[in-house]
Image 1 (cartoon, rainbow, N blue to C red):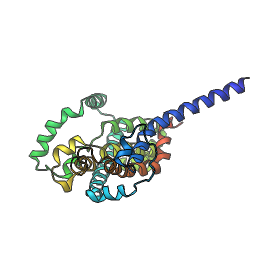
Image 2 (image 1 turned 120 degrees about the horizontal axis):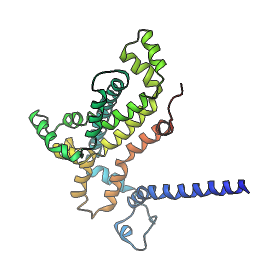
Image 3 (image 1 turned 45 degrees about the horizontal axis):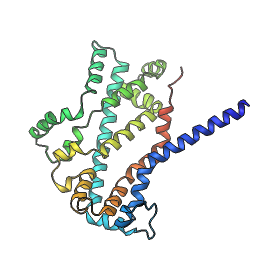
Image 4 (image 1 turned 90 degrees about the vertical axis):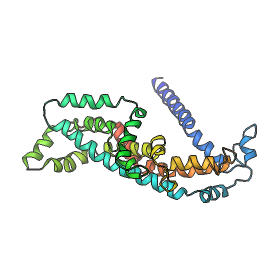
Length: 279
């Protein structure tokens, strides 16, 4: 009887997970199917789940209607640069907080965590003034350096580094290893899933970033994919009249994110399920 109850409980959990997964996946599925429908099929009631004659040419038409290749490149390039800088900064600061002992260390870390509670929008005005005085307006450099620090990354790495046995660090010091070598040859291999998790989360956030880049980037050749997609919606999309083209453009703009998640999924799940290292 207990075995039957366990099987029923397990089956119920799987059903709930399938329902939740479908609910989360449905918006993307609806976007893809709408991209190959006609305007009449999109607005028809009852809804048309699959078009009678799929219009696959909408993807080519949308791609040729705006420089989406340039927009995707700009977003990917800036996101990769930001992720690389954030990984370097966050790992070094987390190493300092976990391996160095200095006066005011805990107070400094508390101040950093408190700054994480400040709304991002509250930093736009001072950041805009600083970027303007540096002469970096309408440049990708401004987008990169203004997102160079990740408070979440510092906290995440600090928690991961604290789980590493101190004996490994001490052994490295005894062998004459420098702090740089300890960080990248001892700590990094043991916390690689954490690095990949932060890289994935940060890349998605920076790739989808809209408001701040839209404030400092004015030239069309500098637009990120978010601003470019918005521009396409206004001009080519005629404020939502050409919904099939808008859905097609939205579909191929998320492909880079899907590919990255597919390749990094193993390490991402590993980092979520990581319970630390045992001494």
